[in-house]
Image (cartoon, one colour):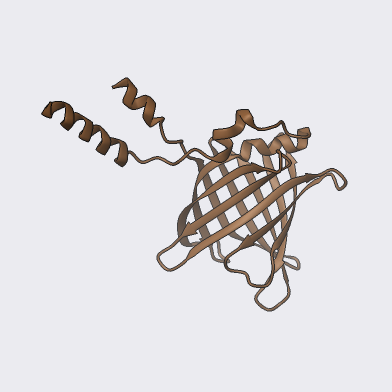
Length: 202
């Protein structure tokens, strides 16, 4: 009896310490969700899921000034008409959190989106994007408020290296000056195993 109890306690401890992440909304409910309204919106399905994030911030010479880690969870909303991006990173001194939405605009034949974060107090960043199927990349043009009360433009190229990894490179645009300021690497996170099934198999 003691052996059986010890085994169960050991199993419980092993289950608790195995590092994993909860499956995303898209992974849990993909089969039960309605289909996307068109082929352009269907492109967004490859972004859906939970991703581990590594950010590298760059100075004007291209040298890395800071590296921070975090997660991004991308889920379908509004009956597969848009995706929501929940993004967060944390350094020793600060936490960054953001929520974004992206959908297909059939009138403009482009993707449109909006981005809110916990740093800007002057309003959201608006986004226009195009998808290139050959390179599997999304090019975002973004414009948001700057600290002086004006507007700041950015360009981000987000490319899939594989189904499991993607890299986003962001450039700040000031007139004719284009400066690479950020590179973000995304690695798709594995969902937690089905613990009930594991216990049943023991």
